[in-house]
Image (cartoon, rainbow, N blue to C red):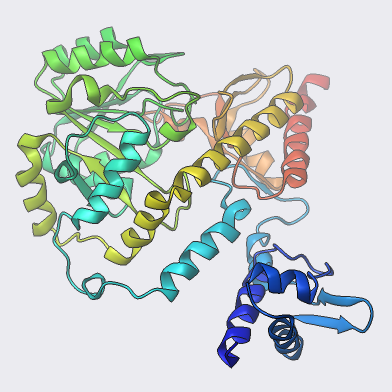
Amino acid sequence: MSESKYREIAREIEKLIEIGHYEEGSKLPTHRALASEYETTAVTIAKAYKLLAEQGHIESFVGRGSFVKNTSYLKQVIHSDQAENEWNFSILQPCFSRHLDALYRQFGQCASEPFTPSLFGYIEDTGSLAHKESGMKWMQHYGLQVRSPEQVLLTNGAQHALSTLIELYSKPGDYVAVEELTYPGILSIIQALGRKPIGVEMDECGMLPNRLHEICLSDKPSLVIVVPSHQNPTASTMPIERRKDIASVIQKHSVWLLEDDLYCFLNADVMAPISNFVPEKSFYITSLSKAISPGLRCGFVKAPQSQLNRLTSYIRTMIWHISPIGFDVASRLIQSGSAFELAEGQKKIAAHRQQLALSILQGETLFSQETSYHIWLMLPETWDADEFTAIAKERGITVSEGHFFHYDGQPIPAVRLSLMAISEDQHLIAGLQALKSLLDQRRSS
């Protein structure tokens, strides 16, 4: 083995220590066991361990073995927001700390292999064909019908896709129909661009088709934005018949559909998107931010064939070219199957945490699904939403207040609880118990 081999192994072990794979104080594998894993010799592993000891990462004892010495910087960063009496239930993101080892390995592989030179320069504004094919594979896996990768455009995340489509397919002063309760980021874009959001009433299955039809007749919105799967904040998922009914309304009116399907991977079974039933009047949007990591700003848009040139030209005009290196990493994850495994892992974590939350919040009025990232919690009559949020904050509990999600900012006696941003289960349990205690406080008094 060359001298560089043991240094390479030492770096890999150091990364595993940083991400918590080898915890502080834990015993490392024997020289022989690790030599077998890395297909090298025990002498090479001994050299790697010696280097790690010199760097202060591990310590070795004759007859006992080698042990992790210090707490890693990365672990400190991961848990820096988890002070003993602080819980952040406001961030809707995957629990990616559980999969950092897999992400670290994938990024390490990408960095160790030679990149195509074109990834470091300007790239065609619609993205490379290989990256589009990966986007098509991701969307098809979760039920979208796509004829060719040319229909797929690449954006810097879903938020970029939404802002681009809203600006291009509506005018200042136009109405944009949204779910009555919706993601605040959508409302921010609409208002910043001088458009006017108009809310469509919902039930437990999502947007009501008959109310959408009435609004299309009376207010003539240019766009309809729908989050069909694990809707933010209500956690509702449209059944297939409701999706068909929404598509039927879209078909009848002069309006475009923007289907924001970031959470499709959380569905128990693959469900056909609304866009499948109205392909020439819809833009389907998804990304990897919720399934894998917010740091992967990789959005995919499936556009109608008739709109490809117009949308491509607009992206070129606005100089919103994507980063090809980021999409190359995303493509490797998708093509290897790792992306789907990581997404499935997040779904399992979400299901486990939903069970924890439901057991602790027994007796409360809430809306959730078995594999949703979040819960929509209706507050008892004894609590005002503003007051509850403020007092919870004083106790180290951060929640998302209901009025932020209403299209017109009206007070809503509810809060959204994200179950995924808190890394450790025990810390999550303590936070939920603190939240339940606060909810019960006025009942008892």
